[in-house]
Image (tube, rainbow, N blue to C red; front, side):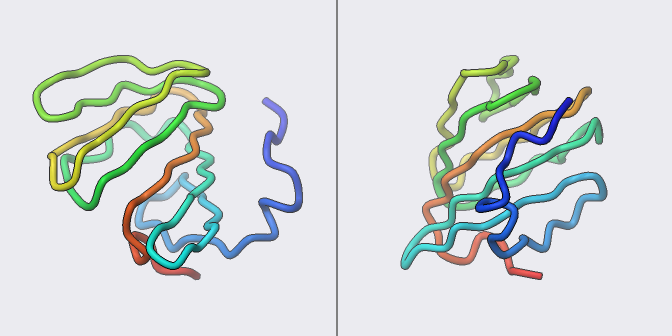
Length: 110
């Protein structure tokens, strides 16, 4: 799979993400972050919650559980996770997603 993100995105500050095999570049707003993720087939991201999140799969696919509902999301699909709703994800192949987080400090920068 070729690099999807152009240099203008890869020149953004990089997020400090606690999962090996996940990279993200942050477009920082006054009260939000947009993160451009590259996620290797890392398996499962455990259940967690935070502020509201909206995202879109740019390439690849993922299994996302929001609350008690699990669904597979593929290229072009989008999702919304309300504030403080428990969710988890599973990545079995390289996946590219873009997420909008309704909080200015979802990720610290490297």
